[in-house]
Length: 254
Ligand code: PEP
Image (cartoon, rainbow, N blue to C red; front, side, top):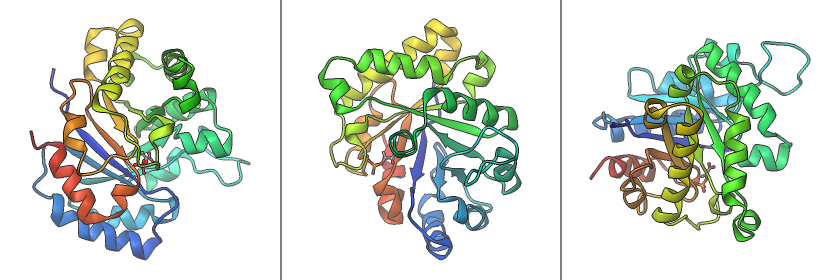
């Protein structure tokens, strides 16, 4: 089965409204011929409307970096799916390791965020990944298995097919250290096997699994040549339009 590659840029806490407008306007002409790949930019909440506006009529979609599970209420600092849908945001990243590390997010509330997104028609990008200590102590498989089971709990096969998973080893995020294509492939194939066990062959073969962790235009091609790597979630390299545009082109350049 062929899966359409998906490259998403996670801008984290970077880019004001003006910076966002500028960056998206620069990116649009760089990637307008790249039709065989889904392209997403995820700016901070304050810049979402500007990104949607600047990406209008282009092949770039906009995603949020997080979303809350409740529709409204006393959740200071949180944003609901309804608020994102109103802005024409199409994707939401859930469970990014920085959210887990600095803001106490757990697999259980990642699962809630995932259900809320799917219910509203947002495409979730669910992040999983082990720390260096967990990898070194031989726990990688158990950690990924646990995260996948809890994060995807009670998601139907149909909805699973519309969900994107991002495997992001914590030790490779923002460190300049990229997992080798073989290391990434090993975990991607584990995730696909877990999907096969929990769902069925069709679901496992349909779900797109991105790799994330110091992806650049210079290493995307080798990563994409692995059979279970369907794209990338890109932090630092997505902040520079020329570099991100190049990376997107190379992702589909076999
Ligand atoms: C990320 O933020 O999801 C990420 C992978 O960052 P970087 O590409 O900078 O490692």
